[in-house]
Image 1 (cartoon, rainbow, N blue to C red):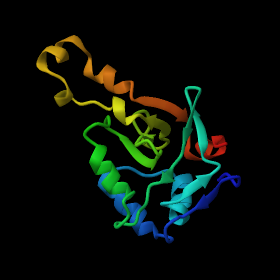
Image 2: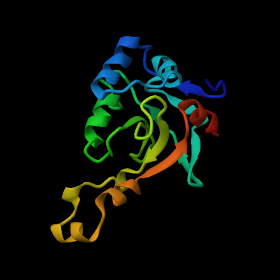
Image 3: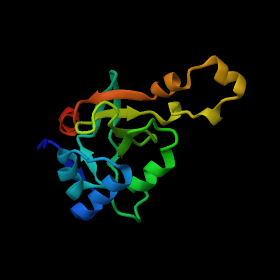
Image 4: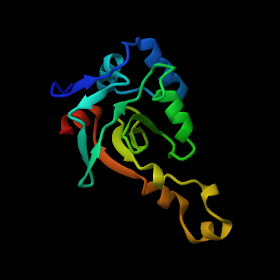
Length: 161
C-alpha cells in the first residue's frame, strides 16, 4: 500500500465480516490492497486527493463507508446508481461532484481495474424516447460514462497528487 497517502475523517475500524457482507451481496471478491485500506480508512478522505482522468484533474472526495448510518455508505451509494452502471462495476469512492471511482470486474473476476464513472453520462433506456433509442446504441452511450484510471487500487493510490 502506498505510504504517501494519509487519510482524514475516516470512520471507526471495521471487521472482515462487514467487507465480506458487501462481497456476498455483490457476488465479488474485493482486492486485498483495497480491503486492507478500507478496514481502517473507510469513510475517510485521502491526502493527496487529486488524480488524472484522461488528462483532466479530478478529486478523490472519500472512500465509501461501511457504516450503515453514513450518508456515504457503500451499499446505499451502489443502490442509488446500480441501474445506471454497467454490470460488474462497483463503486468504492466518490468525488465532490457526484461521480464515482469504481472497480471494473468486466474483464477479470480476480483483478478489477479502476475506472471513473461520470454520473451525468450514466444513462438508461428510460432516459430516451422510443424514437431516440432507434438512433443510438445505448451500450455505446453508457460506455462514454466510463473512463479508465489504473490497473489496481494500489496503483490508483500511488497516482494521487
